Image (cartoon, rainbow, N blue to C red; front, side, top):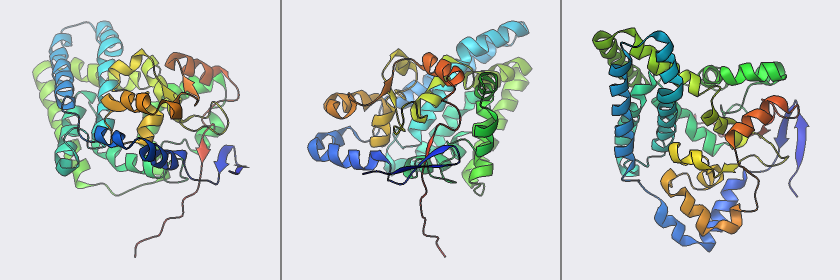
Length: 322
């Protein structure tokens, strides 16, 4: 029997993450799922279309009044930018060009990063590997809030503030929880990003820059799409640490809602995750799932039993290399 225990206010468990064993069991029963692994040939064209759309939008907003810059930033551009962060999530698993062209995936992620306005893709890749390998790992999985976040953001008003500041916490938390040396690719990511920002500013002024960056920040905070951040791993039911969402917003988020399926098979592109659920339905249909990301945000804010502390944590003993 799996054991759970209290330690602080997180839910500490002393068993392995469920995705490893479920993956083995599903593959033993449905080996044809392996055929879904590999690159998605359409991803590069979809992402490129989104990047070009945002560059066109930069031209379109440069003469607008500021109130309309922010309106379109939140209602349109931010949605595209949030979707691009999820494309970068997919690309981090090498599903744009395959594992044999891993470096090309990294550069393509930098291309997808351009409308976001701030360098992000290279650092995300570095930490996202740990999120899969050490799900819930204390000091390893930087997706989990810090103790300070859990302690302070515990009332409805404070939780709303935490949601609004979520992009800031995602950016700074790795530097506190699990700092790593800055890589050459991260420096290149920043150099390319700021060079493109400068060109946009030179051509069209400040408003397009604000349009891009404000959209990224606002739509990763208090926005219906950002409900997936909470829906994926916050423990709405005791003992369950990963949840899927099968609603319509998957159409604009690269199927990130199929999150149990994704953690079971991270090398399968988001576009093919619905096929995983269909082929192995008996493994997923009976598991808890969300039906609305907006409802997730509402419950997170107003349910006293849910907050930044509502995460499963475990310890991993790593062998240090000399």
